[in-house]
Image 1 (cartoon, rainbow over the protein chains, first blue to last red):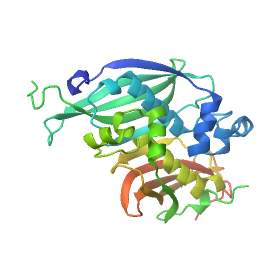
Image 2: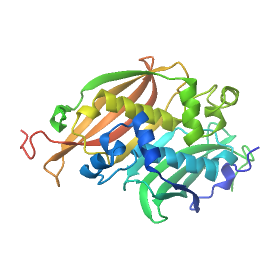
Image 3: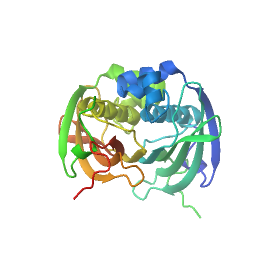
Image 4: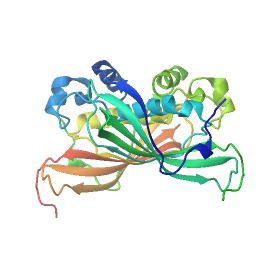
Length: 154
Length: 154
């Protein structure tokens, strides 16, 4: 049973989750299946590209964010899916050896007008390399069940 | 050598690319690695969720879009990476047996002020199920080398 509900996300709250060390094998494995551009497959091609070395597909970085979200809090939460992503900025390459963490900021929380059992939370997710450099900056809306459906908020 | 350059993307142009039939195995395989929410792993959990049955992670759908982009035109193009994604809307679940195609619309094309060898193209990518239902609607900017760097346009 979930123990995190819509009410538990407080606007302005910032937390950091997880740790994932990237390997060359996972970068090339993802790229072979989904994004076979040479700079994601081969170190020499990466070095010759604007990425300056082998680097993960931007979609691989997004998938790693999702895994950090799942392990960090979503699998324990009463999640009800997501309508989509407002924006994703790929700011820095993700490379073999980078240790990634997720910084989550609650940008906005609002109840649903049409569904009193549900609320929507707008998150900023930043994928950090070595806990300092922001590699990906993303704004996502996720829906959650309310612990107290339809309760009036002050 | 690439045979598609920035000049080849004409505002308003609409083309459809590729064909990919989704399997239950690839849905659960992606989910185990990146998005292990029950509705992406198990048909019964999917049926009990807002998705109404086993359905792909939204990030899996994005990764499939990227593969269709690569195979459709990007691997033949003088691509120079992407700063990010303006918006992604997950509109309909992607399920086993869905045959996916990519509809690409050139929304905008502009030269780079700072780099005369480069241009930026804003695309709308729609992931279609059975060539009609839009499952994912996405707006992405991709940078391309210019065939005629710095040439003045009328």
